[in-house]
Length: 102
Image 1: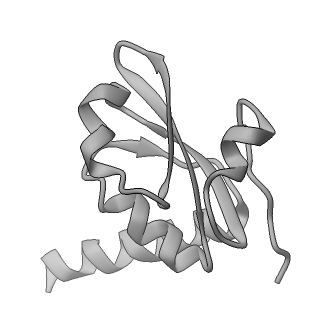
Image 2: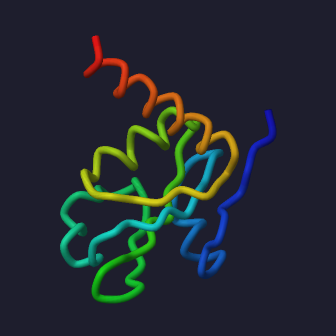
């Protein structure tokens, strides 16, 4: 499996602050100030975009860990890559959907 680098990052310095072999930049649908207390040290870096959204530059050792970290923030988000993270989010979405249909 390919080890991806940050996608759509604003700068290499902000994405490099997120630890881990797998990195992503995710759009979070709330202002950075509202989410700052949900991002712990070493998890990643928030970057303000506008009054309604921010970017999370995040890194982890696996796509599964990335998906857990992103969903633990408890806000709407958009993931566009890397492909391994998109696949892991799809798996998680199917698992959650099946849990409420059971």
